[in-house]
Length: 213
Image 1: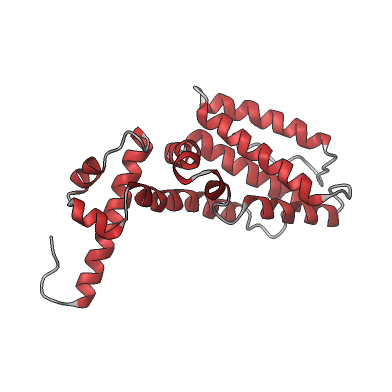
Image 2: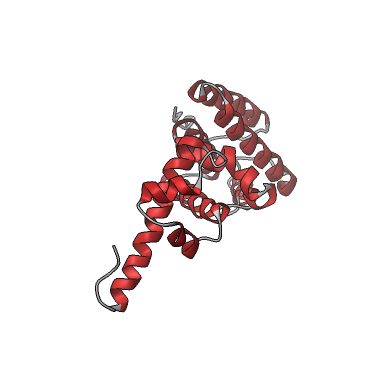
């Protein structure tokens, strides 16, 4: 339905409502069927809109996918920030929380698993996909430097270690996302990661952080 009259505020609200409807509908279809199997005709029909409305807001299906991708990945980033907001949390705990949040999303969040992890690299390209969000590698560098400063990690070259841990995290999430049984895969890869990180000499203060399985 078009907004009545020529009120600019109503027109702006209508534009935003249309954009939100397209993103919400595409998100559901991309999560259920994947990017390749989802047709633009199905998106506009389910949203109750026209193809003209879709192409007014987005250049093509890939552009719409990018908007959905940013919404879904942004929700997980916000969850991570909320989980990491405890001022008493040390650098090692923050690193563990970061790993657990992303593995949990890979195993239990269908939209994140399909849109961000399975379709994201193919649709957006590896370079764009790997630089998403607030930059996983630079956050890990931050965690590691703080861990050294807090005496939780022996002094060592930080940047190469951060890239190694980024690859570990991405590989772990991909393993979970593509597994036939994501929950079992998440538990098993989490245990493997714990053993690997323990071998780095990372030390905690007090009890180990609780598992988030």
